Length: 126
Image (cartoon, rainbow, N blue to C red; front, top):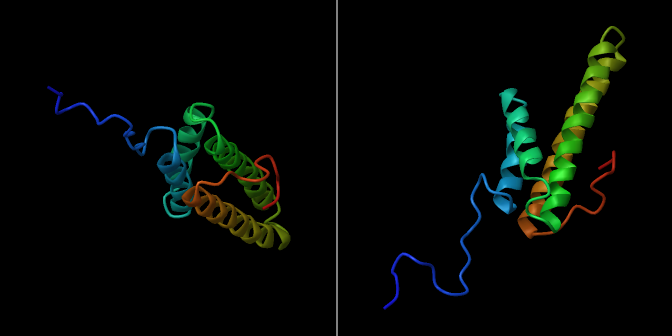
């Protein structure tokens, strides 16, 4: 007799939202984008990225590295933008920072959905 609760041989349990993997990477990017409305969600996203980096391996780890760098570089650009708001250049740099973060999140979401790695996860550019 077989146990009705045990999974069938060869079938994998799908990864959950909080476990390292495709769904968690997509959640991190979604939290980053939601951060423009609810600021704390970005912090939650980077915590998920730090907790799960190195656990999934393969293409997923490139996404965690990309997401963590997106957070820190975006924060750096944001602070510089705030410091330069006395000059008009700070407002323009702030808009450019928002666009940069959104584009990186969209690229990450597209590649994660396709199961592809980020080509240059350590890059400062898009």
